[in-house]
Image (tube, rainbow, N blue to C red):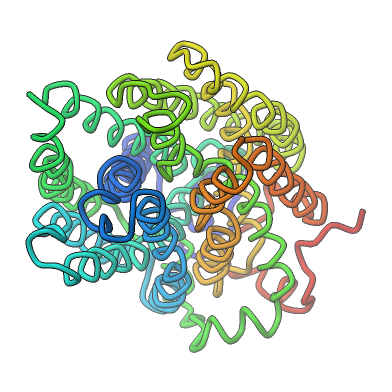
Length: 464
């Protein structure tokens, strides 16, 4: 088949380069494994920030402020996601998706492993939190570039009628990363001979395990071919010289609306992935005081349900459309937000688990279709920049400081209702973003359709 053949309903890519089930499975497997490794690294830090970093790196600030500082370091990385998105978008639109995925995987793995080797404040003083923050910044840069490359590799290889399902493969890497991170941390906490041993050595083990995971992820990703859409752009020599300039000159409003969609999901998701629930439910001085291992196992179980609903939503979006799937998800997420803290505050591990699982229904339905939605919004020549930067801005508006805001609201009000209303407000913003975007499920993704997309600065926005 010619490399410039257009996609049709029975074809596998815009260029016809993927012709077998084995090739398609390899693409899906590589995107799942790669994003799982990346997000394992990212979530291990968030979990440790909720459990130990306040004591080990920020203790001189006092007990309450030390925990806020610990959560701030989780959020700081989000401020550098746009830098990672800009760099990855530029490289990905000019030199290919595959190259960027290899670079981000290595950067994340090196930063995570080094966190596991860091001396604490008691050993080297102020240098310890400074180095911790620097390594978290490197994680943020990597995360900013990883997601866009992974979703484009998945969706641009997909059959037209299965983009939501293929796009869900890197999406389920996020709950898989959370499952792996929480599971490993829970196992180490349960096997630790004492809390003192866990604080001194145990928490480091999950970070050091990153070395093995990175080697596995690197090997798998090397076996995947470049995105067929980029190959077609390269053959025609139609790569954009300055993709980011072109993106903001033509599609600024589209980027902001896409960012709002992710912000609504991300703010709620970071109640667990950002370590807040772990800290709130295990704080010995707090109202709950549950065992660390019990809470981590509850989070691990909720990651399984998040994975299931993320996959289900990606599959469903191919049948009822991206926007309809999102609208179902926002309704479910509001139910989850208003259920969460009343169940957590009972002090029952079982009801805490139920609350987290209910929350993951909406989280999955507002995350599973995102890869396909974002890919279909932007023209091929600036697509990597568009999806990466929209994702990074959404992460800043949503999850960046959600744990910090939640901690501050609880300390200021003495209860969790203010946190609930904050999260509900973020869900409403995500809903508005979804309503203002056009559902473009199944549109052609190749460069033949660049002209139509480039002519309108509001292409992709809803007329409703």
